[in-house]
Image 1 (tube, helix red, strand yellow):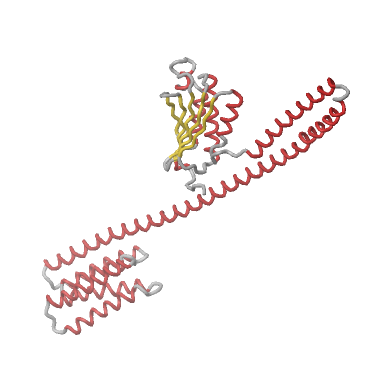
Image 2 (image 1 turned 135 degrees about the vertical axis):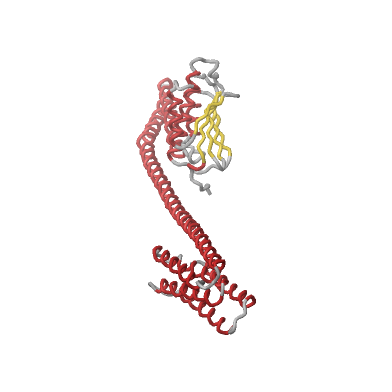
Length: 388
């Protein structure tokens, strides 16, 4: 039993005993005190006995409290309720039910010489106490079950957090391995292609130095070839360096900034990339969804809206992550072909919507002031750690 139940048991014994001393006149108060001290001894030992002995202590206590009722009057019904609280919490419920019937019979036997009013008062008090005790037992078990479920949920939460951390670590290791392999490939490219080309340029330069004084036209042709070779080497060098040093501006954005950079370089339109709020890591599935939605929205902006400027805005809050992909192109109402984007006829929009639902998010369209595709992902689907 818990601490509160033990306090209640002792209170049901001590307080009625003190009240009975002032209410009733007994011939021997020392003997009365001895009887209650024996009851307190039984109560104290009952909670510390091993094996089947607690049940035996409960049987002794219920019989002893029934005898006290016959010896010292109606107030002794409260020590009997204390005994009820004890044996009703035994592990075996059939034993507790048998003890209840036995206790009620013993109490009626103790009050057999009393008036019907006293007997009715005793039975009503005991039965109401038994009903109230039953409700307390149910609420206590419900509270214990709730605490157990809470502990289990917390344990599962820690296990899921650990598994998520391992997945993120494994993902980082795979990314690092891929980057290392790409660096090795680029190093080989620098050595095999650009290195050999520079050696050839050096040899052509030496030949041009010797040729220019005697044959200026041939020398100038050689210098033009050297210039072309150097320009090609510079292009290869820029590409290699871009691959080595490229790192997305935002972890979890799945290289959305590079997507805009390549789009602007290939088409010549204006691009803009903004981040609002404190960024936090995203699951790989969410990263892929955002990247594919952004790419689809940008493709539609160029193909159907004839946009000359596009932008992506990432907004991070405590409740959700929002990606807005907008453009300054034609509105769906202005172009009949674009109106399909708002209905179920657009396969691209259906794909974006399905991908977003798979990660627990929603997809929205906004026409004012510019056409914007909005992807919302709730924070419940995201890791809670913030980058250091």
